[in-house]
Every structure is written in C-alpha cells, then in structure tokens.
Length: 208
Image (cartoon, rainbow, N blue to C red):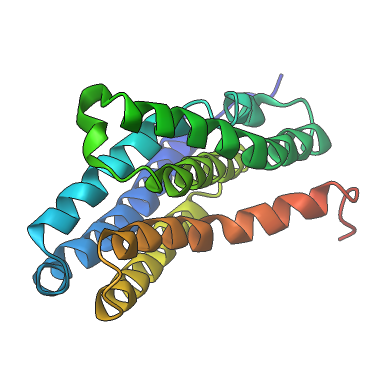
C-alpha cells in the first residue's frame, strides 16, 4: 500500500480549504453587498414570504434524492458514480411532485406557520426542493474528484446568477417569486457544469 506523505496531505488539505473558503467568501460578499439594492426592490413582507417558502423547500430537499447523493464519493468506479448522479437527476421530477404535495398539505394545514403561504406556491416550492437536491448531488460529485476549485467557482457563479435574477425579478415586480427565482436559478447555473461533466462519464472512460 502506497503511503501518503503527511506534509503533502496537509498541503493538499490546506489548498482545498483555501479554495473553498475563497469561493464562500466571494459568494457571501456578493450577497451582502446586494442587500441595500434588494431592500429597495422588495418589501419586508415579500422577503418574509420568500423566507418561509425557501425554508420549506430546504426541508423537502433533504429527501429529494432519497440520499443517493451521499454514496457518490465512495462509489467503486467512475461509471458507478455517474450512474448514481444520473439516478439523482431522474428522481428530480417525481420527487418534485411529491414535494409539491407535501408543501400543499403543510400550507393547508398551517404546519409550522406555512399556512401564510399561498396554496399555488406549493408547486414552486416542490420544484425548488428538487433543484436544491440536484445541486447537492453535483457537489458530492465534485468532492469525489477533489474538485475544490470547481466547488469554489460554482459558489461564485451561483452568487452572481442569483443576484442578476433577483434584481431582474425586483424590477419586473414579481414580488417574493423574484427572490425564489434568483435562488433556484443560481443553483441551476452553479451545478450545470458538473452535471454535464458527469454525464460524459456514462459514455465510457475518456481517451487522453
């Protein structure tokens, strides 16, 4: 068994941590700097409705992939990992339907105060939960390949697209739906590249 040089391992971990932190700082910096503009485009009530909708979507996202994504880093080979990621993608549609049903029930029964949300928002919440799950699966794929710079780039890309769509939604007076569109669109933009890369793995090993 090949031994790992502790100093080399420590250097790799340090570089990985630096890359992840830099992406997170830039993404959060974009969000913080945009607050004055967001508060001019959206009312406190709209922000409150969005917060409730997004929290429900986040809860639903926990089971959107049936937790198959956590097995991706430990899959025995590249094809198996890609198949697991594809399975997460195939589950997105049916689980978004299930999430919509659960969200509708939570709204109608006023569970944890979600009754303040309009019933029609259940569909948007179900889709948002599935998108969060797809982003999580993409992140596990990149962790498998130690693509920490790519994860950092994904966070920055997500932050930029979120800001653009959120501003667009505010200018179009979409209300809290504009905030939701920003979050969902940002996550789609952030995870698109790793998804495209992983699907190539299903076609067989690349030829260098």
